[in-house]
Amino acid sequence: METKFESSVREIPYAQASVYHRLSDLALSEEVRDQLPEDKREDIVFSSDSITMNVPPVGNISIQICDREEPKTIKYETVSSPLPFNLWVQLLPITETTCKMKLTIKADLNPFVKGMISKPLQAGLEKLADAIAAGKYE
Image 1 (cartoon, rainbow, N blue to C red):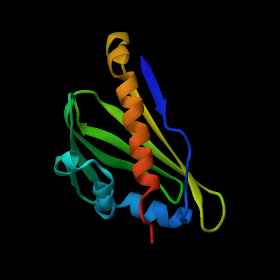
Image 2: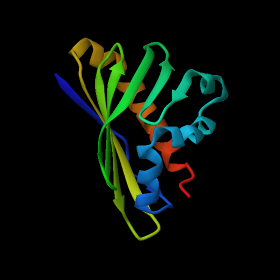
Image 3: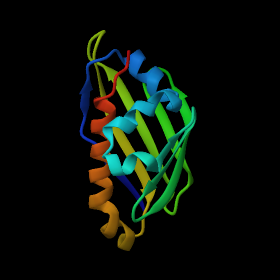
Image 4: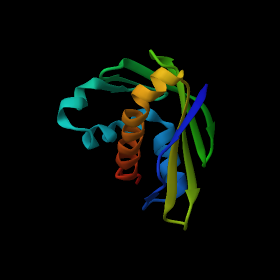
């Protein structure tokens, strides 16, 4: 059963194109590491098209960019994960110098797994949205 999780919308004080450029090259997103708790910073590795992270209690997850629609959407898919999912970053302009962002995760979850991971997954999605919104995109 496909389940969708969405973050709340975040306003980012940078132009849509600047945010898109940074997020569509994951190696440039290395600074997100600074937004993570110190004990989690060693558990994440960036390359230009993928991120690998250790997510307790799930284990290692590797995601890669599978589609880019400049300057509004970046889609990721799992490469290595005990639970396959897709992640979308949606960016919309507000003004020439600000944009808004929303994250969406879609995964096929059976009711048992959904009951176990819904709250932690939603909380993690909100933390990721906070970290992206706090990034520097100059």
